[in-house]
Image (cartoon, rainbow, N blue to C red; front, side, top):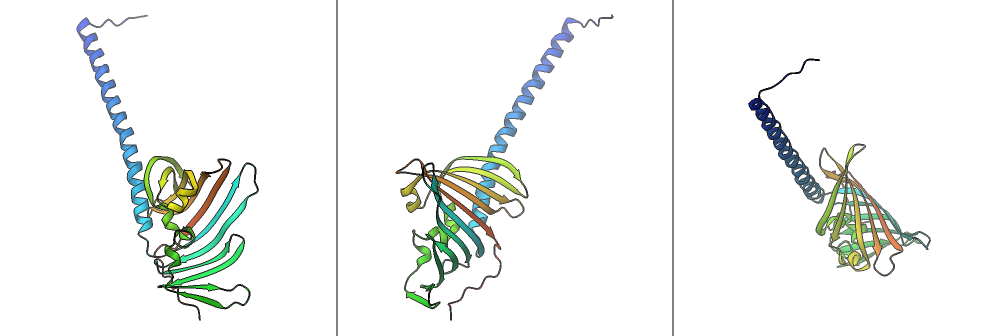
Length: 229
């Protein structure tokens, strides 16, 4: 076996070069890690901004109460169309009762499920009330006080999946529930939210949970909502 003997000076130069390469690699790695964090925050902010800027959209909502020691209770199963704060149409079930609402300007129309006739409430903006805000304005679920925890979960089919633990803005939800977790599927092409799954824990009973699934489509498509005839 032949041994290659380097002069002492060259050994030191080689060691210094290796050390410098290690330091540079460490700096680059840390920079990349920081870049990923920044990109994640920017991606979330842009997705929320572009989604909430939509003038029209269609959606479905499935919300329920569940838990360890109770049967699942469906709160709402809704199909809706949104064409502005004063133009909303929803149809489905609310607390296991069939419902259909149309909001046009400051008038709310409610369909009597027995007779099929429409009842109207003048000067009533049901879409802006906190009680029905999820069913009539579902993008309001993305109003947050803060998002202290967010994480990329990677690609899920055609969408980017993120998981958040936000502080929600809606006082009705915040009063009744805590420990919110959001899973959000974002279309990377237009950076708009296609689906969200929300889970939370009751403030009065930690064994009781709230689960909401909302799917969105037809952003900024032409949607006409008129008063019933």
